[in-house]
Image (spheres, rainbow, N blue to C red):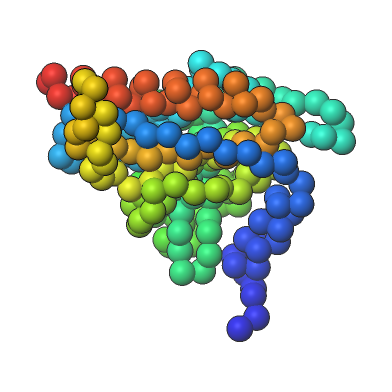
Length: 214
């Protein structure tokens, strides 16, 4: 079948990104053994990304190679990848760092509903400063993700599940959340990416412990 509409736009955008970006990736796991049974994974990821952007702002950035400059954003406008039968939509959750948990969840539900009903305004599909792909809700652990310029980073979250890890020097089974961070190596150093991912993991694991203590 001929590509058209959203699927054609996705194909063109991915081809452009592949030609323009110098990609690199990091992978790691967050120990979420103490997450409560019905933990809102996407909410936790949004909050962890917002936190990591304050620790390492180099990834909440736009990069322009032709102008030889980068624009570091004070506000986190988070792209949320949404899968549909017609192709991929990436609506924008505005000011993710400035929202509380309830506002984030309401915003996510509103974006998802607008995408499903194809009523989302074009402006809501632009202006992302960094992107999240929570593909683990469907399946998979790690991914090599596509960074879409002018953004310089995208975070992927895999499926939460048991893994054998070292616990007090001995093998043990823990629930883990696999994370993938792909970044444009023209604008982001490996150390900056590593600090960002470490900050995300620290936040996710701390939230897990705090949830267990309540």
